[in-house]
Image 1 (cartoon, one colour):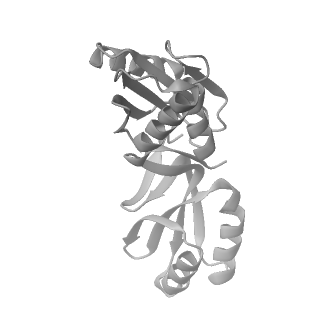
Image 2 (cartoon, one colour; image 1 turned 180 degrees about the vertical axis):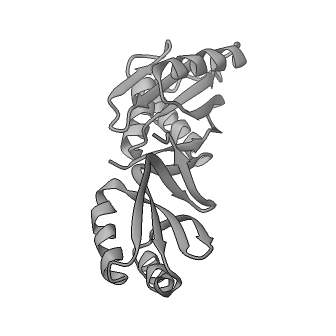
Length: 217
């Protein structure tokens, strides 16, 4: 099942009635990682009044935690978590640090401020979509290259590498659910002359800079 997460961390800041809200966003894969990040942020902003947070872990958001860290109940942690849930972002933590500006914001004002800060933090991150994939190597003679290139282009197949020797080998990665249909299409396009070798499974994501591979199995 595809899911969105952050590739790299980021930090954004807003100001509301002279109170500063600094949102730090980081990718996490375990609760211990999240707790370590919270501890590090508290150390970095040791003089801040509040370091409120929310995190969600698991491709389906199986684990979710949030904290108001001294703010009125429900005005900080849950609003931050609602941003992660609304954007459907997983394996991510947002810590919003507040420096009090001397003016009370009220319950509604705090909710809006923490939500806005969380969104500002995400705006400074690179968000990607990760999905479970299957590596394949398509082997063919030179007569089949053009047909395969056309097929892969029309199906928007993620090509990882190509090797041209006495034969041609093309490494690709596909969502697991599309492997069967892709195999059938290759067989049809090449008259069953191409061979397909199955490699390892791995999560992957397409970015502007190319294909990223994660957690190869």
